[in-house]
Length: 184
Image 1 (cartoon, rainbow, N blue to C red):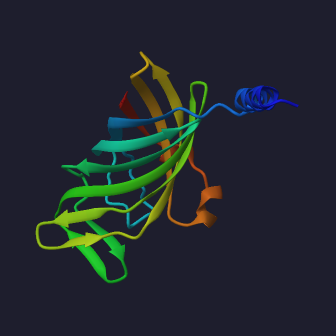
Image 2: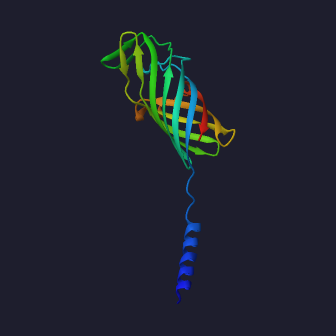
Image 3: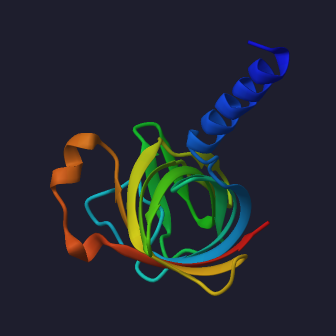
């Protein structure tokens, strides 16, 4: 075999290997803004939100293939709750605002979204500020792309403190939000 034949055979094998390799997933970043309306959770004394309270979300998302990580923070400037018991030792009276850092893993399939997140509230009162315990949230929704860079999402959220509580689902405890996402 000549050198030209070996080089040609090697180039042919490389081309076959490259063409049969799985395509690299498209990676992108997204900035998201949103609004969410809460419902009261009378059985959850650690929830600082009352019926109709609204929060505003700002988040960064890292997208890869059919899933993305969302790192965000929401801000609730006013709440209808007057006080909250965050744990056995912490009571925050006269709540002024709530800041909620959050991390979510969301899966996308066609127009559907399904995700899980972990959140923690920083409740600011007139006299006392305090962090809540971590809690979990399931989300499901729809996303409608308007272009390759802009999309609108409608999301339903279901919050729970302990994994054993997830089976106690009550549709009246669902909360809803809208998000606008800009991919770059």
